[in-house]
Length: 218
Length: 218
Image (cartoon, rainbow over all chains, first blue to last red; front, side, top):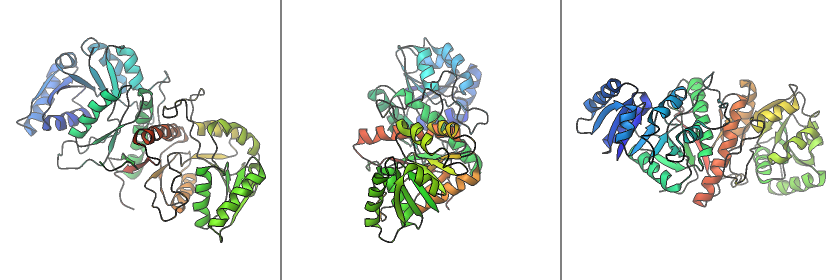
């Protein structure tokens, strides 16, 4: 699959891109400036010489890809989506965005009363499909393929088939994806990011995550 | 510790009461009608003949206890708190309440924009201290002391000392309590209940829960 990571120069976006490229996907690291995307891609290619990783500006990346992953701070979400709106029509947009307030360990309720994922869906319109995922994973060990990731991914979206696509991407990145219900439920995954950040701060750790228990063994 | 469980005749409240009584606490099962509380207490005493378990109406239970646990459906929260408001002044009120919308697996944003726990704090005033906990535990195995509970408890509240008291109660009930930040963060634990319910429905299980990963071993 051809995956564009919008805002892919950040730690989480590039870490996910690294894992997907290692799993055989074609990855395009998008950034506001093409050169920044290209530089980040080069860095990843140095680690994975056989992988298909390129860099581009966000809009070109979105245009070239089958699926787009939004990995920007919430503050940059609206501008990034405005930039790629036409290019993601007819595609799946997976949003990793989790709004963090001040202080960051405190859950931030957006003035809209919605989750950032729902705001993204409203902005893109019905022609694109937003699925929320990867809000609660730590970027710390993404670039270390030998490190087993001890966390699950909550996947929120309207259609099970779309969530299955994202669950497969979770698997390719070494994590278990779990259908967490409607897109509206993304407000929980987004808020959980602040809770986990607070736990990181209180325990002086970097990678608190969550696991869903009680599920039958695979 | 003398613990009143308001709405303690329900599955979760009575299950927690059972575990706390087994751990040596004095437990008062509160209900709207004293007889209902007494009947539920009798049932628990049959299982734990040596334990200190009594039943009462919610108000008498709250008056007699050191700490009150609110375990009612969200729809009954305001009325129950109005009933016990005077009796819980100067005390800790631990709320287990998680609002569930329609459908129940969909996160319900309260019209106030707040969590149920914050609404409880506003209603009780500064004289009582609300801490949110136990939103995400399954009642299924609470009455089976041999069953290890595979879940953590997110504890939200303003003061670390109060959360320490609740963490000790988590431990007494066989679970790990984790400081999850400010009372405002209860919106995440409350929303997670709907997410877990949806997971239960989709996987035909009864006890999905959460674990926080990445913490140092105790």
